[in-house]
Image (tube, rainbow, N blue to C red; front, side, top):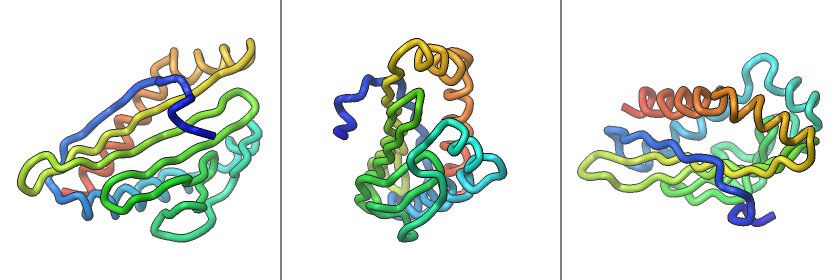
Amino acid sequence: MDTSSLPFVDEHAEVIAAEADVVWSHLGEVLDESFSRLGVAGYARLVGSADRTASGPRPLAAGSTLPGFRVVAAVPGRELVLQGAHRFSTYALIFRIEHAGPGRSRLRAESRAAFPGPAGGIYRWLVIGTGGHVIGMRRLLSSIRRRSE
């Protein structure tokens, strides 16, 4: 699946007082910790995600999985592309790290997703329409910032 073919949902960003390689290492750690929380694998099973457990190389690399996601591209210090699919959605989460000045990086998280059919529309409302996705993304990026600084 080509992530650019999925409809754009949103993008969130944080400027972090750390170099890209530091942000990169903490990005992987925070993702692993966040997706290993109680209930995440169960949720992935419930909605029928193809990837339901964490597996593969660490630090994250192409082929690694997290519940609900598979790493399809990893360029250390620059970009991490996660994709997933389940009964209600096909989606991608793209993290990009950019230089933002001396000792500073900008971490961007772009979300893309398709929500086919009536069930997909309801799921979109539950995840996106209620603001839950925004809250989750902001928490995730804030965690990476705090750990990196």
